[in-house]
Amino acid sequence: MKHKDWSPENSKWKAALDRGLDIKPKENDNILYLGASSGTTVKQISKLTRGIVFAVENSPEMAIELVKLAEKSKNIAPIFSDARDIEFLKKSIFGKRMNILFQDIPSVDQVEILTKASTLLDSEGKILFSLKTQSISQKPSKETFEKVEKMLGERFRIISKISLEPYHKKHYFFVLRKQAY
Amino acid sequence: MEDKDIVLWNIKESKERIRKAILKDRMIIFFTRVLEDLNKYSNPNFYGRMKDIYRLLFPFDKETDPKKIIQKMKNADLSLSEGLTLDNNEVNYLQFFINNLNEKCKLRDPRDAKKKIEEIQKSLVAKYLPSSSKVIEPYILGKIISSFGGIQKISRKPSSTVQLIGAEKSLFRHMSSGSPPPKYGLIFYSNKIKNSAMKGRASRALANKLSISLRKDYYRNFPQPLS
Ligand SMILES: C[S@@+](CC[C@H](N)C(=O)[O-])C[C@H]1O[C@@H](n2cnc3c(N)ncnc32)[C@H](O)[C@@H]1O
Image (tube, rainbow over all chains, first blue to last red; front, side, top):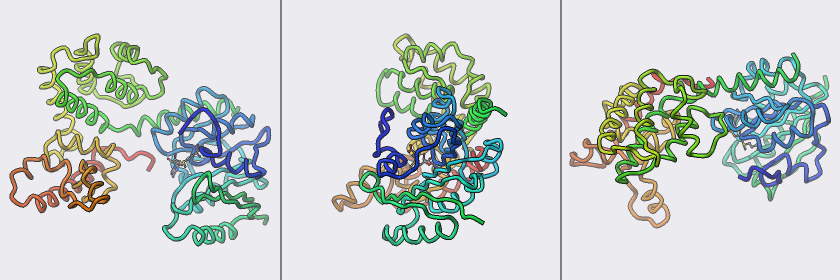
């Protein structure tokens, strides 16, 4: 993967932006970014806000690159942790409310991870969720998509949903909000 | 707390946690690969290997020039690394290797050095993989761990994968052209297989044993990061 440029091929956030989704961070947004990898997207996003981008990654090799990137920037807080470890995430954000929660973790329990992490999100905050249907099940992509959509619908308000083809095969992108009580 | 301090806290905390996730199997892999180089070539240079070990010990450093890396490694206090934590013996092992490299990054006396490196590799394996080192020769064990990319990855794989690791080429040939499937990978080179009449069965049994002992060694002698 090329490191320098930010393109829809190497970033799901960028692909979704290019598709016209209203997901550009505001000037002072704090962002919780789950599945940061070496920080290709994190780097670009951090330039769009003066808030903090909390970038969570659980692979040591990737997290090393992320730390190096954070040392060169001002507002990236690297968190080497399993995104499921909500207690540690809570400790690491020092009571900041998150305005955007982004998740790009290909894993069977990705909706569970998202649900837990959404407790750290401001009630007005936005959730950006990248879904790779193949990581959840071997069943046809459409079937899995519908199942996940239903699960998400029970827990959140679905604002928009799109497919990221052809940039990312079998990937979908959701914009969600917390349900009002 | 101010944003600036939150960022700094997370950088520091992540560095510490990453450090704990760099496991001692890296030392075994390092010395195994050095031995592999010495078995393959008569007097190889070790620029690439020095880069590898530098990245393990100083993962957050930005130096990429191999000459400078070697200079840094020669002068550094290896017990104070930001990455892999070494005990006294391990510092000595590495220093022996580094101090024996000449200005071309080759061993001054490859034949003698190799003997000593074999001993080093063996004692690392015996220390961190005591059960497995009773099941198979230390050099083969090192190659198996190196092929998997680490002990943690092996602990999640079934014994059939352990049996076939190193046979990727013939496995691929089998899948694409239907040639007979491989029965053994690296473990074939163990004397336990070489000297046995029923090689297929023996390699399955050996892989089973090894798979269990590796898991045991992993859970007993390595910290499990992020859990
Ligand atoms: C598809 S990549 C993310 C790419 C990144 N979003 C970008 O645009 O540059 C997914 C990342 O999630 C990480 N990951 C997987 N499971 C995780 C978990 N449970 N907690 C934190 N990170 C995880 C992987 O190591 C991998 O680096």
